Length: 151
Image (cartoon, rainbow, N blue to C red; front, side, top):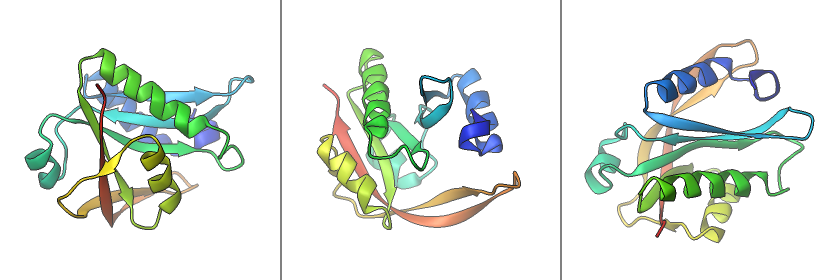
C-alpha cells in the first residue's frame, strides 16, 4: 500500500487507529494488486472544536486520495460510496468532511454526491504533508465543511 501511495507514516497511524476502533481505512486496489486510492473513516471525536460543537458524534471522511494517472476514472467516487455504505450499515445518519479552499475538483465531487456546505463557515484545520523521504510536516489549512445525510 505505502509502496504505491507513499505516506508510510500516515498508513501506520491510520492502521493503529483502526486497530484501536477509532476508524476504518478503505483502500482501492487495481487488478494487479496495486493500491490506487484510499479514504479514512474517522470515528473518534473530531479534532476541531467547531465540528465537535455542531456535529457531535458524526463520522468524518478524511484523506480521500487517488494516485495521479488514475484520477477521473471513478475511483474516488467508489471509495466515497463504499465509505458511505459502511457508515449507513453501521447506523450512522450523516457524514461530514473538510475540503481545502484550493481544491475545487474535490468540492465538485462532493456536491455531485449530495454533500452540502454547512452554514457555520470555514474551519481552521491542520493538514499533514508527507514527503518522499518519509518525513512529514503539519501545516494550517482552512477548509469548507460538507455534510451529507445518509438515510
